Length: 304
Image (cartoon, rainbow, N blue to C red; front, side, top):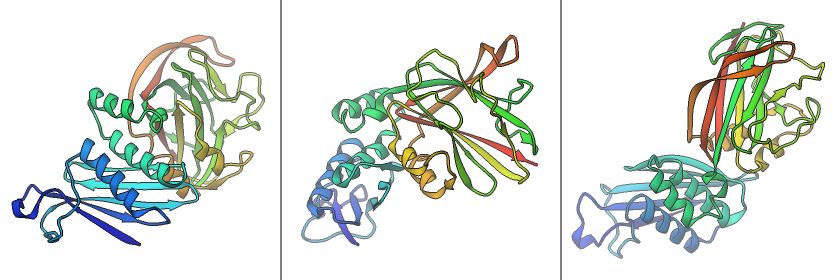
């Protein structure tokens, strides 16, 4: 593992405002390309940084750190400094993955639409997924049609169902995490429903579907249960890799790569008319999720 350290200004003019960029590099990346890419992106979108002078660097200077690791799931980036603290990932190989992950780490911290638009226009191919608006309504309910809210208590034998109504065309993924930290892909899953991704805007999708005899039921293992609603403008290859035919898988890689993507999310309550299976039309307070690229909603339930 090697390090690259860069200075923001000439040492002769060294002042407290000087900043440096420290890149921790792993795998077989070209050091020069890593250096130039990191300097360009951080300088343009975060704060000006330049290569260090021959005279070396002082230890008391402002420092930005880019930490890079690469595994079977792709590239993982941590970017931290006085103006940013962010993490991101990419499933693209090599330097494309490094560049995409670094751009994502910067993009997700922007709160102003003008800044988001600027980086999206400049890197529209690498940030296509991250720059498209994704919006959906979700409703998690029990066998009586009553809403199950984040933080609610559930018990063994309780049943639950999911309604999704996309407001934009999107790819939906619903994943449960049981009290033993196993993951199960509820949707898409041919064992649950033959509904394919992507989901069309303004249609109501029920999981399991109305015509199915299948039910979801909490088991006899108490603890913390979690449901993840993941919505994306484009297919998420990472999720497909983690699951095969609905089998359970461990959580570490999934949470590391997927959940770090869904930061740009706003939620609000909305009342809509919903026709649940075996129930009349009724007004429901559903949750409206909106963001760009990939959005992730976590629902935590206390399983007694």
